[in-house]
Image: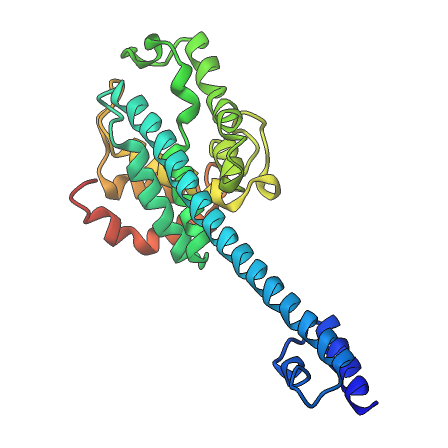
Length: 263
């Protein structure tokens, strides 16, 4: 009876996931045959369960590694698309990589986590991916203002970019950053004319990084401004064109950015 009671205790532990070697104590010769038979069966079952759990853990790890590789491949592919797009226009070559770099620095300065800053960087790299389907006409130099049909095409690119990337679930909020990076706090941005509370922080960060790089780069319609002059423009538009806190964070890291030989 004592052996049976002990077996019941051990079985209750096993049922609650508390595995131990106690069951093996009940397989010794001095234990009654009935208790010993049940204990041996339970011990064998535990071995099989543990083996399956180990195999499951290995499969989960393999899936995590595979998922990571898929993510890296997907990011590499769309980044290559973004770089190929930029290469169509000698004036914007390298623009997306620089925007991603500056945006990540602003994100870190604003206290975002490493993972959040990386999503902002990725969104910065991919922010113009919606231009991938643009006609070559868009990349031709235009004197003065762009023609109206070109402007209409340009204003669609944030939504087009979000549509292209929508199935890459691991990008998470980065897709909304891309969709909203041309929105403005005063509601005069595009494509949806969102206002301050509706615009994601990541998008507001990219807007500042994008504007800085665009204004300091030579374009067909204007010569690139100096970093100092561009900072003054950003500060002057803070609160209307660009988010005040993002511009303030940019100003704090401005010495590091303006000293960068690649910009």
